[in-house]
Length: 89
Image (cartoon, rainbow, N blue to C red; front, side, top):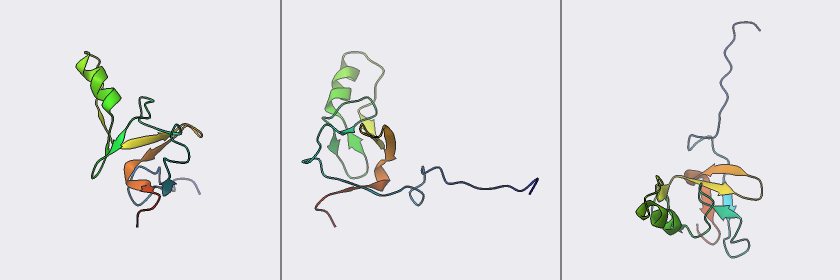
């Protein structure tokens, strides 16, 4: 219908995101920070990457805190709010 607005979820909101369960023990190289590092750690509400921190300390314009994770297998970006870690309730 012309003139009809259709709202489509892009996955960026917590309610829109498709949940992803991660088991880092199974595929540790699959899950990466947005800069491609696999050495990230979890915090309460985001990821922290020590490799990005080292780059920032060396003068690169890089932030060590991230609110997204990249699935290297599918090249999909996943909001941290949609990530569930295996073994957690």
